Amino acid sequence: MQDQDLTALEGIGKQTVKKLREAGIQTILGLATASIGRLTAGGIGRDTALKIWTMPLARCEAQHRWAPEKELIQEYQSRQYLTSRTKELDRVLGGRGFETGKV
Image (cartoon, rainbow, N blue to C red; front, side, top):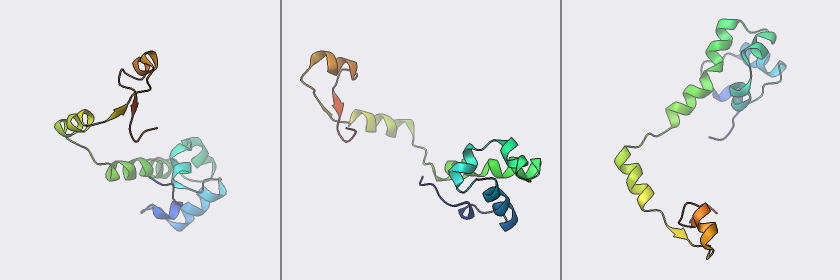
């Protein structure tokens, strides 16, 4: 998820956004990593702070796609690897070498 401005979160009013910005919190990631103490020190009530602090996590969970186990196993088994041509390095990399698309 790309970091976005606080206004991208639904349910946060203009006054709250203003208080967050005054506290130095400009983005959704900044909100997610801020402490509750920092939010309340910025003039936001504890209940509101707890509510808005969980919003980035809820947003992330809503956008996350959960896959069935069978699909994950199939994806794992279809991965392709390139050998490093060094037996010990390939062993350290899980015995297969470099996974294609990950280097």
